[in-house]
Length: 114
Image (cartoon, rainbow, N blue to C red; front, side, top):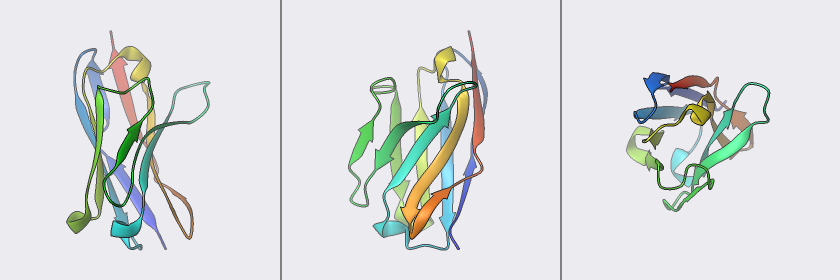
């Protein structure tokens, strides 16, 4: 059974940074693409960043140049480094991977104040 556990959320002021982590278990992590999504209140969940098994990263236009996705296969962990945070980045951030099924973590809250 795949389990994804996010951590690293919190409250920061605009311009600050946070690093989110997603620890995966119950899967062959190194062959799976990993994704970060976010959902703000009253809005649909949106894809923020993805990283393939070989390390190729892609980003939503809204975070390009500010967020960096990475992975450490030895630790079964995906990361999302978020810099130059803006109030509009406030959301619950979710880790996701499709491994036999579509798997989600429980989410971690990020709040950015102006």
